[in-house]
Amino acid sequence: MEKYVDDFKRGVTELLVLHMLCEGDKYGYEITHAFEELSNGLYTMAEGTLYPILYKLEDAGYISSYSVKVGVRRMRKFYTIEKKGKERYEAMLRDYLLISDVIRHILGLEGKTDG
Picture 1 (cartoon, helix red, strand yellow):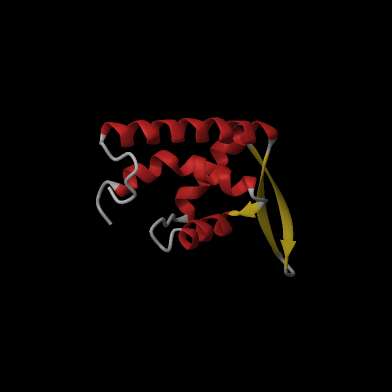
Picture 2 (tube, rainbow, N blue to C red):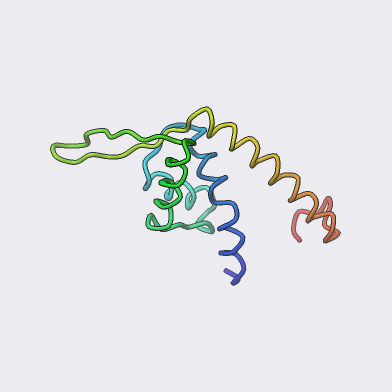
């Protein structure tokens, strides 16, 4: 992957995490695995990168968490999106789509699918 991809990914990770949680409650590994699977391996994220984002979103009240017992001794922490988080996701998505369109226009890529 090119060296700029990581910079671009950092800018949209919160949007993508909120999107994943709009689809249903998930635990950390499930989110990172979904990123990788849905992107055919092009968007990978270490759990160590994801958790600070989840903690930030939780501290802000956009998501909440709960634990579920898995097996005999293990607990798994699930994250769920709150109403405030859905509103943030919708606002972020609108802004993302707007700026994406503006960038494509500036670059002369309107209507093209393979820059």
